[in-house]
Amino acid sequence: MSKNEIDFKLIAKYYEILFYWSFINFRREEELIKTLTTNGYEVKRSNIKQDGIFKIDLIVFNNSNKYHVQIKNQISNLKTEEELKFKSFSNKINFIPLLAFKNKNQWKFISLISQGEIKLF
Image 1 (tube, rainbow, N blue to C red):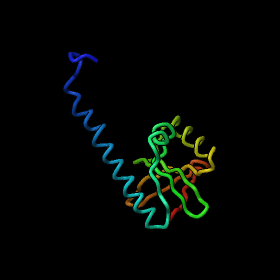
Image 2: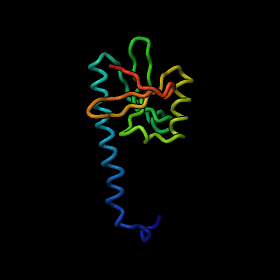
Image 3: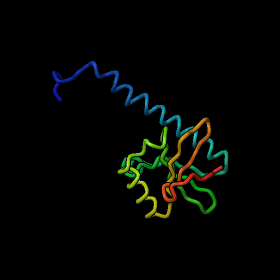
Image 4: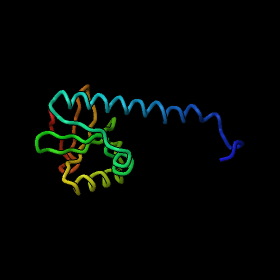
């Protein structure tokens, strides 16, 4: 893109997408990490490849249970293609893929295998 092609009216939109939503997502991850840790889970952040390609936000362990967690602000925000990659990779290495979202100040978890809600705490 050349200098003459830049539409400076879009800067506010770029800001919103790059900074605002990244910050909001980071805060959600931090909150869920704290909640899971408080409830006896071991939690790790995914690496860039796991997040970028397989859509894994958090890696969660408790006893013999292993979960990959994708955090969304609502259930419908996980695209079908992303869900397939997420489920396929998780199944391949014997992890349970979970979609996490907040509903009325409570974290909810949906198993992408059974499509049902599961209680982690």
